[in-house]
Image (cartoon, rainbow, N blue to C red; front, top):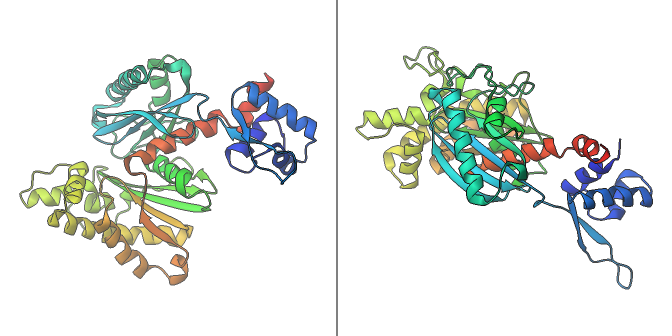
Length: 384
């Protein structure tokens, strides 16, 4: 272990060290060396000190706290028909936010330019600029290659494959560093960061216009070999189905059980619904047809999630996205528990996500901070 200032910051950020004495115990470094590391972090304003209680009659230790106000993060969580923009502190607290209508089918140039303009307006409204940012986080509704950060053959994003999204957005925002992620991965990381940091394995299934799953293993997003992990919307659950998915295949889960599929079924009943967001509005209003069809979709999704649960054996399985609701959760539960062995689910918590549409926002902040303030990055910066 290097045990530089960045390693000390990592201990403080993760809650594994709250005082200088904790750092000594965790690292085995001398008190003098720890003092030097802490002083470097204090001088860089990456941590702050406060009083904490100590033994009665003894000298009280000074607590060490990560400085979430050191700088800001700007994020853009892109769905198929809209995006959520936000400025957050380093702890993920949303300080300013906005929504933007975008259509992923318009291609990367149009969408990314619109995002850059929207983020610039939001930063101006917040009273900050790109110089105040640690970085920008961008999530997309398709696989993102973990090495290049580029979309990797996204089934529902024509024209985006291999496009340098981070470079484009960075250039439009004056050169600030941009980190990219799949939308479900970002949402899963957000839920993990806020309420489930003790979970060794967490999954979040996002059901909106499409369907995807985000996976967090031992505190880190699991993206697979090239970003395709969790792309369950394109599992072919009924190849004989006449329904054609947006990826071009017949009988994909997304074609049968996504927000777009439920919207199509509602439209066939004469309801003026075209996409998952509108289905979500009907669900919140208690619409019986939307509830019935969403629960039916949940049963189909549960069939695929049963395989995911048997392979990963997660402690936490969350349901998010525009269709996240009691009917969807009920449908998933009906098939998931029936198809899995009891031992696969005996320690499983299955519930709705708690962050709603902010899950990806919080997750993108965590992603940017984990990378820009990693032990290696901070060590290099403070020793440079």
